[in-house]
Length: 170
Length: 279
Image (cartoon, rainbow over all chains, first blue to last red; front, side, top):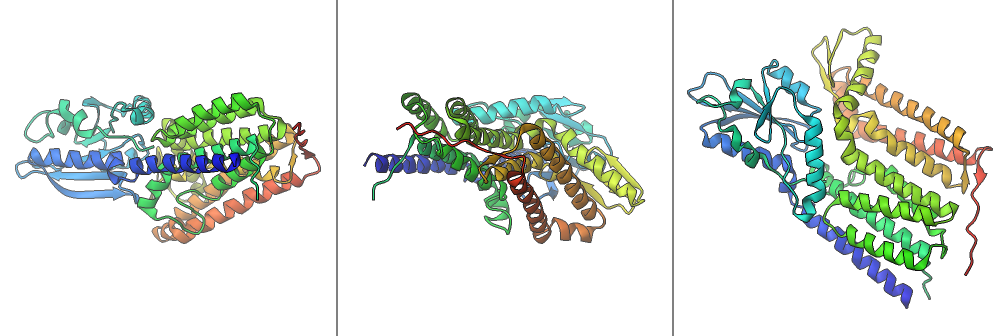
């Protein structure tokens, strides 16, 4: 009797645990990078930029580059979200011939601050179930001048944290 | 028919449940991107994860009632509560902590099972989070090997970080999922698990030597695969596609499990002492 009760309790515990995680991970929007990309595209469109092309590497939308165009600006912008992985940054750097800026939490950097990002995102992942901090992917922008102010830039860099803040998935 | 449930069995079931909870994040992600099952993958987990869990569970179950009753109850209560948090990473950390607690309190045979659970949890934490801290070096390592393999075939090869470019203009970028240092720990753990199935344990030095040789072999196997898929876009499609991937997983699995079984059957391996039942 006691053994049966233990088994039933264990089965219920397992179902609740798996169910709670299914609720959290089952929603595709928790794929942080996808949400961040949608937010960024929406923000760019409100600044008058149109998404001319979306280049995807891989099958799960993790490595998407947005090519943005604006009628009055001669050169298109390229934006890529790196999440906590920078294993595709060489491709982006090569495609834009090295003229790019990395923006993390609204702050521009010449090279992506991956260790800081890893620490921040790992903490956000751990604290997420307890209402913890949001995480920010790194945004690679080309040309580098596009990260600043001006009619042909993406503008208001200080607002980027709220645009790219995402929940963590693992 | 009465069911007999020892403390060892409860601990083993709790650890298996914790592992299943830890696997949800990756399983959901894989479900969305690649579907549930291919030939050698089950929700994104190859053969190695369920196999290691099975061997570890078998060994922890051997504890019988040798674990201290009250302390186990308290540790299990805290652990079971933590597992309910909606985070797979928290689940793996909890499995690691609970397995470490069992390893301290259990006799030799179940202790090895608990250490297997601990190692599995650490490997899963490494593959899902830890490896990203070293992502540049981890992916550049395979790109460096690939560059030298292709140079042996006398191609004009250029490498920039994890991006390898042949003179023909065919680019190959090494991403984390293909990196040797991400895949290797699980292979080594499964080999060790397979060696334990015979109920025997190799002495530390020959065991570590064998695992080091296996690590070299698996690195070479991945290097050959990367070299072949770098030869042309057509070769890439073939080797990186479903059939090529399943074939590679099958070869890797067979090599790892066969070496593991051989180690367990080796003359150097000594039988693990049975747990003395006191009740």
